[in-house]
Length: 116
Image 1 (tube, rainbow, N blue to C red):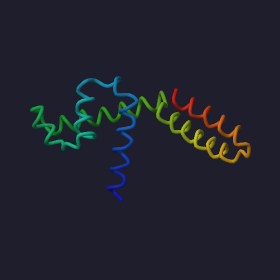
Image 2: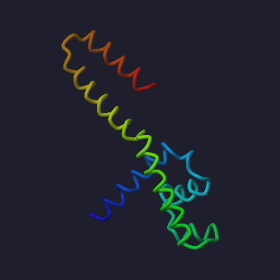
Image 3: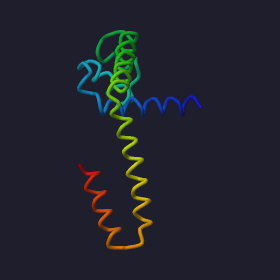
């Protein structure tokens, strides 16, 4: 159970990092990249940058907090998630349309929307 929670947290941080990376400091970006993307331990990061494990932990913890605050205020990741659910729902509805020509027009329109 704890491993699943850890994986969920990693996935969430990676998702938020994709949206809000430019809003973080270079050091926060670097440490999050090392820890969550490159799967380095706190000790490995600390050795690489010649700082304490506690300092690395604090940088990562603060960066995580910043990502969560940005999402709370801007809500970009949640809006995309809702849009994806709506598109999937539309695709299901389109597949129920009996007229093949009309169904293909709808599919093209959905594809155009999702690509922009």
